[in-house]
Image (tube, rainbow, N blue to C red; front, side, top):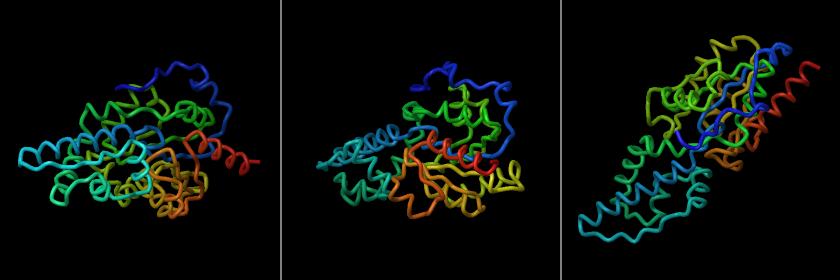
Length: 263
């Protein structure tokens, strides 16, 4: 995997000796894409490759397309405001007859290894996770990403030891489609194992409406992050308990709440 710095900062390492002085006060269920991994470059590259493929198909049929390729900033802003992929394709100059082909192409290639290598860790993630872990919090990943992909990335980055468990899917396309009911089912399974009693000491942290809706369905406090694929404006419509810029900010907020409760 490219883009993952080595896990070698003494400040960010965690040891069982450090954690022994803390009582476990919370369980954090966390999404993967967005809060932990930045997928923006992969999604943009997928969009660009999809347009290139459709352009070649059109030329082979004698059609010349007048495409308007969005910049990465324009593309990501539209994704964050939940603009449909069909509308993004239309605004990129694709005629109606080519849009379904483009949408299928994007879904087919988004998980190809050469594109997956473009994912990178979000800034501050190592320190955020280590800080939670050092305070005895249980960290459980609940993600629509294929479970094998998540395990590989966590192993390669040295982060696997910080998580109690991983709840993922076996559907390579689930993360791209962002199925809210599937996320709710996965979270329910994780909650049944790791937090059956005091849900007020739990958090669901994610960057999409699926994360917020899943947490709300199970009556778990939710934190929406704006570092991923949804904007603050969009997340506000689902009324999470908190909206934070990134995982590090969310961790600081969760620890602050835990200290208030225990005071």
